[in-house]
Length: 139
Image 1 (cartoon, rainbow, N blue to C red):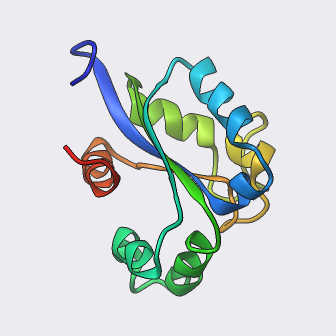
Image 2: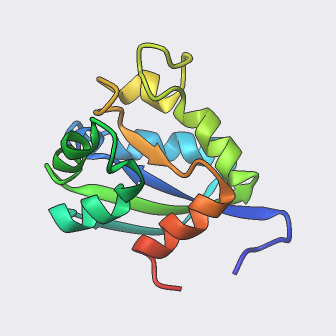
Image 3: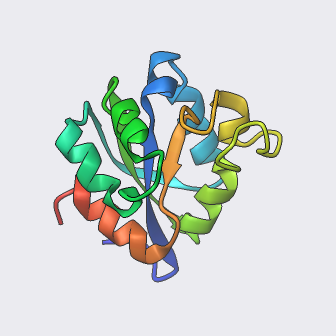
């Protein structure tokens, strides 16, 4: 599965706002520049049911319905990333959820517009990465 015992996998979603603004190439260049490899890629448009299932962990939160509507508003790109400490490395590259608070040169600072339209999603732990990858990519 992985090229080395120290390699880890994580999920990347390039969100509808970033796709609409044609940021995918620049985002992927940044991903590869930090040493992560794009192993698989799919472009799709989520159905409302898929978005609700993927974000079910947030079902009780006030932003759940809005998030699901946003994530179905246009095409997304889901990617399987691999590399050393991939979850940590990608989360550092993404930056804070709020683009206004994100560090310079992070994906969300460069390409995000709001907390919801913040360009990218990434798994927050190796355990969640396994579940999120399985949601989009068959084993």
